[in-house]
Length: 365
Image: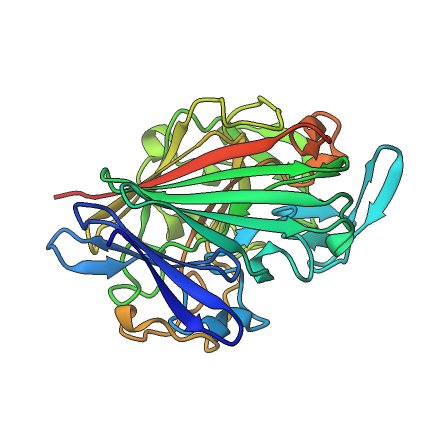
């Protein structure tokens, strides 16, 4: 069966769904807890199956307080909101501060810690729909928000993720998935420093950040900080090659700019292939495309070493700093507080938030 359901914890209603394409060259496992991607299985250059996502076999581990959002759906607002406050319709709303002076990834109990309702949409392609109703006032956000996310596995070895949300009161929204990839399969290399990154011409630059990791509102070019550039003659640079120039963040944790169409529903915009990642250890390549205006490139700088042990599919290798990298498609961080970006994050009653992101896997000979 291309889509199967396995009950993990009957007492708490925790289920895992496995989606397999018809060629059996891509298999994805998803928990209804947090909408979490737990396994992504693909063949390497020798035909061996590799699990290229960081996560756990035991769902209870995802509830660990130090879990850095492995594989989870993030909402209501992914990334940071400065000082944990924003204004909608003239009223100021305040959120819990869980990242220094910022509100991060939806709050203390964001979408990553919710149990989602799941519906099997189709067997070919293998596709499931996840639904969540977030009540008015949840984590401090206004309006009842109804969110729908679909995961689809296609025969061209793509994992397609679509996001949709509606509200009964004006609110702010920014949805993403926080999967950590290790294309070497962890057991071959427990860090991603040797993974090669190429950014296409669709990536126009990056956002300047202040000392609290919040955008200042200024767009920067590669000449402003050459160590941020993975385009042109810097294509294929390994992730760890320039870490000595990123000492303040211990790696990459930066929002990159794709386009400036700051609309609430990007679903009708073209998919833009923005990043190609490649692990020479396994020959596995992944392409990242999205309709979103930006993505956060994060290299697992704050994964705590000695806390988490990997899955059986990864030989139980321990996770640690730089154990995986993330490509978090999104609206700009702190967009509700930036006049030029606010339209991309302000969801009004009667309108629909939407976006699409695709990860496509393959091998190089």
